[in-house]
Length: 473
Image (cartoon, rainbow, N blue to C red):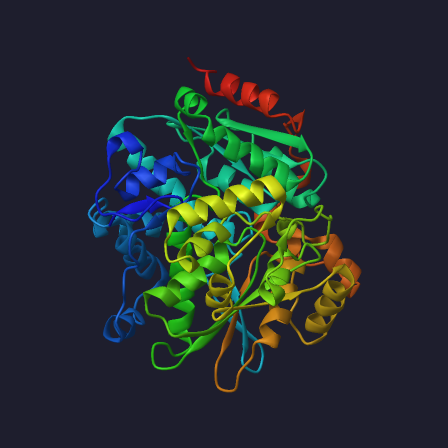
């Protein structure tokens, strides 16, 4: 399995001078491509109906290992991956790991929040911790991971990488724009290889600085920079697995399914689309947005134009620049790396993306969008709670998006992305009741917090990262 950048031409051979790695491990440790693009497989692995039917018998760790193996190729043997997935999912609080709950006829919640930090990010991040540890030991290497979070990625990453010998990890989050639970899950981690930085700005500011650090080749080499945001292809590979698993549980490949995903950075719904590319019969892909509705506007009328980020009850979706959309754009442009590069650079400069009509039609043939403001989100949360299902704000948006895409006889599977206990104030405001506190949050409020606050100044953030990365040298 080979990989190339969204901003270059696909090829099965890579020149070292171009900095384009050929292997899954190189992509795992590299994160962002040297040319600023995102890595994608040169071709999608395919699953025939016979294989999919056979996979119905597998438990989740075994299915995840086989899915990731298709992307890892010869880099990591299947038995090694199977041992990794068993360890990665051993700390989840539900025996099914990813249970399906029928919320209403034909509408199912795929609960992805039973991991250590109660968010779907644990599904991939726990696996990334295993993959990084194995790869770094094999190469006798050390990296500094730098990531941006709008709420859940940071805590999941810190939980997965805290205490790892060959890794320093720095997480940037927007000051005052996460829930208190999300913040405390990050800032209360006291491991010496962890640094939290609160940025005086929004998530897009955090994400832009991470991308800028990767674009600076000298800095990247100096601190041995790596990434675990959803720009890292290995995260997408791990997420594809649970969409395949859910589809098989509800009858695939012998009947189609649909997926609805609340999304900000587009990685999770891209993984659902990836399952479709691999052979899972997917009828509809529904994108749920909050009042930061750039993705919905794009799907409705090809309007991909940035607006100021508006704080909401669903902070993990308070995003105007959806990084993983670049991977879909690359596909819709016929894998034309030059066209993708020009489009993304123009978007960065002007705040508006000029997607050709034909490419937009290719995308909207697969995707539909729905957005809810805070008032509509609260109403949806109350309605679902009255019907017996308590949802966090993000999941409620996904459920409403899924309702809009229901078709007779086609199950709609909604990615339930966070435990309601991560957003107790929003749940209380919507329903009048506070969600029960799961074991994962015990003692959280008593733990001391440790965090550095910095302005949205790239030079100051780079200095902090460089100083932290040299702390043991």
